[in-house]
Structure formats: structure tokens, C-alpha cells
Image 1 (cartoon, rainbow, N blue to C red):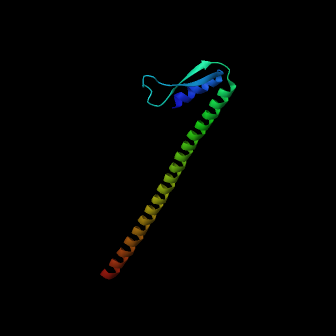
Image 2 (tube, rainbow, N blue to C red):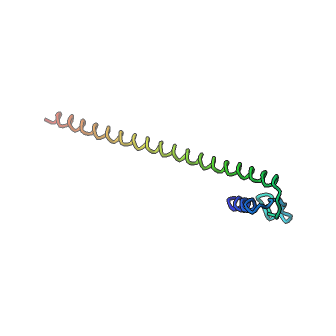
Image 3 (cartoon, helix red, strand yellow):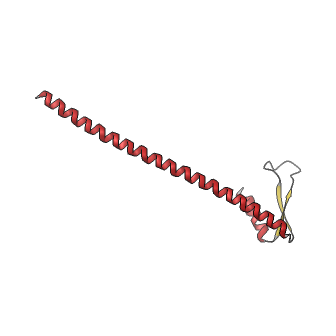
Length: 107
């Protein structure tokens, strides 16, 4: 997907028109292939640029969503670690109190 974007950007940088061409032999399972042909068709370039900008924005949104999920997972991990630390502290306190109670009962 990135390679396709890169080739389309190169087409636009070189002021070429990007045309959709079908895959007559069915080799391209991803859909139509794209080929660059020389020309100065500003409307086609503008449309391609808008499509590429939209696709780049969608990719960025997906990356941002993944970062948000990762941040949320890290926050949950921190809460779990905190809960475990509090549970260990409570266990230690309970163990000390039990020891004191047993010592008092033994004396």
C-alpha cells in the first residue's frame, strides 16, 4: 500500500497524470493497477492529490487510533501494577498482624 502511494506521489511530483488501468490477466488481486503517463492534466492531478491526501489522512487516523489504544493499554497496566502493589502491602500488614496475634496468644 505504501509503495503504491509512493509511486502515485512520484507521478504527481513529475507532473504526470495517474490513470487507472485494469488488470486483464487477473494478476492484481488488490484491484486496478495504476500507471503513470506523461501529460499536464491539472484536473486529474488535483483529483489524484485530493485522493492521496484523504488516504494519507486515513492512514494517520489509523496510526493515531493505534497509539490511543496503546496508551490506554499502558494505563490499564499501570492500574494493575498499582493494585498488585497495594495487595502485596495489605498481605504484608495482615501477615504481621497475624504474627503479633500468634505471639500474644503463645505468651
